[in-house]
Length: 484
Image (tube, rainbow, N blue to C red; front, side, top):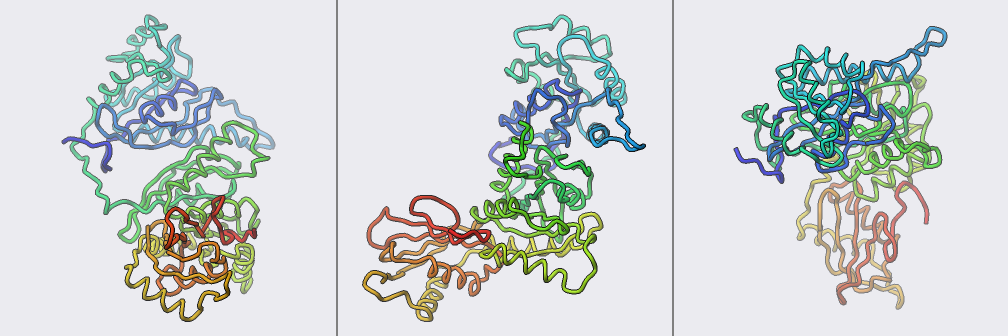
């Protein structure tokens, strides 16, 4: 079977990169992906959750997994009989790494050139039962550095050892050939465009329950859950099925205010979280129901709104709220007040811990995706436009008069319409808002953002986007309730 990197595939064999902290697992992960996917930093232990991505190695697709480092030196810090949060996370990282090893089709143990450390030796001992699925790579051997010492690893019973430099790419092609030569690609099938999953990004402040929700949806423990804020660093991906639909979940790092971000690792984590909006169809914005909305939540919602992504406000930890009549209505009213121009966005009360509200959340996502991918015929759109113009005609003054001659839907997901008008400068924001609301009400886009672009019907090259975000001649109608 010939594989095409431009296509998507399912049932891929999995390859786990394992080893102690700072041996270059994430650097090799990025090298094999030909992209900066995993966060790399000189500080040991940056990677926590196993990261998964499709990589083409020697022309063949694999599911590549980057794991947290195997740490032997886990000195416990106990106060009043309670283990510290950092120690708890180290233990959770280790358990995730062990689970990944047991499930992977091939394990690539990465060692550093030089003498083995006690952590290396303990991990080698743990891997002995998986010897048939094990391949060893010695990193940081650029230019032949320490290769003679690395060959001593054969004394541990390894059949072969591959000398590489993840940083510089030395001998990585040979490693790719060795990996693919050990894998079975017969179950791999082409994943057609019609089967593309609905992509959901979980966004919000730290400790709002994103990882707990991700684990519940995927019925896994892929994302490490801890009461310590900022546990998730990379974007952790997972898949699940619901009512015949496939979903792809992106669990992201919590986003704090820029002034509070002081570490390089957190800076990159936040950037990755924000970038996940580009990759998503729908954003679940998780809000701690007890703490309520923050300015940071408004900024996240505005970013998603400006890109035309579907947005669901998820009031998590609802099981901790007082059982008082009309509580949900009061919280919803507060949200609507703060997000004045996002009254279309659904609000769902949820408990990721207990599962309350999950079914309603996924039903909402299904309805929203159907609207995001809906296309309106041009004839139907212009028939409706005539009706709207009759019911609320444009101004007729000498300086305010304009005509809307034609409309067309130019894209779905995001949903975008282009209106051809006679005088661009005369079209006001209130009139654009009127048309947007009629599109939403009459054409079935009740749950999603509507982008509108104005184009001149007389002179080409004088377009104006009257929708979310932008500079210069662009206008926005106040996403997330912000006034200009």
